Length: 185
Image 1 (cartoon, rainbow, N blue to C red):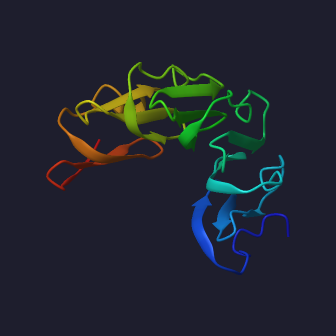
Image 2 (image 1 turned 135 degrees about the horizontal axis):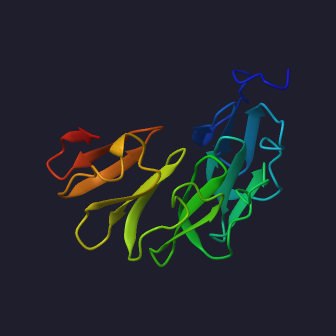
Image 3 (image 1 turned 90 degrees about the vertical axis):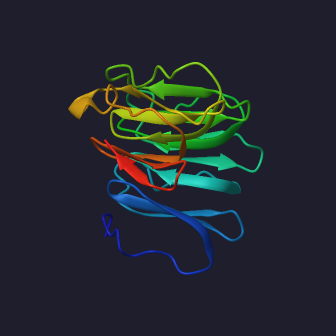
């Protein structure tokens, strides 16, 4: 079935990512397998070898072995049309995406909902993208910076302090503080 989200491939894998109704996995040879819904081509992986993959709402993105970003699937608002450049990581929201480039800057593309495609300036060490907001950790002081839709005050209530990691959810964000405690807002 086209929406068979549990029919995963067999083999040896390095990474897996679950999207809205599809998933993708990066195998040991650097190839990507996607399964589940394929309404917009979100499971049709371009040929090549990769080192990172993420499944989104209606599209998928991957970083190839040359650090180039490749996206496929729904592109109605430009969510599958990333800019050129070399990337460390990427996140996908609802019809938009953001990538952490090899120069540690962030670039976003696609449908702008309440500023979600307007990242802060500076250099960053990590990035996480949610449905309508994104957050990153500043490389100078490990503080969290968030942007985009401020549903449930997820942007304006970003706590101060130093963080080790950050993960954006639907209308909330969680982060590991420098003292290894977890804080969510």
